[in-house]
Length: 289
Image 1: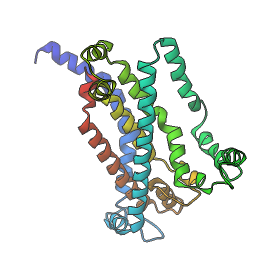
Image 2: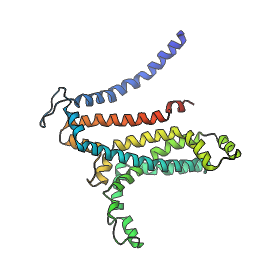
Image 3: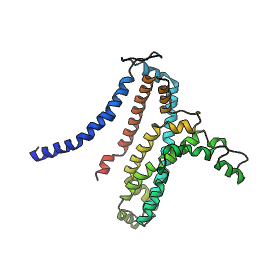
């Protein structure tokens, strides 16, 4: 390696060093402490430094653990599918059907309006809207579509998924829109001239060239759903539970080693899901083009 290349490499390392140090101090060390705490023994009253696999053994042997993970994964899968459908449709319309850039920007900013308020407020605001005497039920009854209020609208899985979709759809729209906007229009025109149908263009050109945005949006949505507990607690009415909400219950009861073990398992599951997505789509190679 030439001295010039070595000097350039050292300069790059020095530039990255401050961020690496900050990430190590404020992310790496806390995660390491969580891992260490997950192996501490706990007798139901107090915990002390040590090493035991009991916390993990009890967690894997508990039916509640498997049930909460299954519920959380189901919420993540349903939310991902709906946000992907909405995000892809909205992005496709903005990129390929809205010709004026100013109109594109205006409509895109319109999608961000809900994010001008707190996520907690946006979550809680669904309760008076979906309640038995809420606006939606009252409208249905006045229109004669229902004889009485629909109980399934609030404090149910429907309410949880609806709130997730409302909160996280933009995290799918932004990367998909960005990927679609980079597609060369000449490729689309060439496909049209060659006699390709709209469906063939969508399947063979638009979707493959948008795969990076889809992958990034999927990572955002899945990780956000897997790490949430507020929506499940507020919108399910206590009828459902997620991994993080169960973890929060352990923390409230001072069962810190069990909560730490659940956190480590959750991190492992999320990392596995992200790794699977990145194996399907090579995001680094796509972004470097």
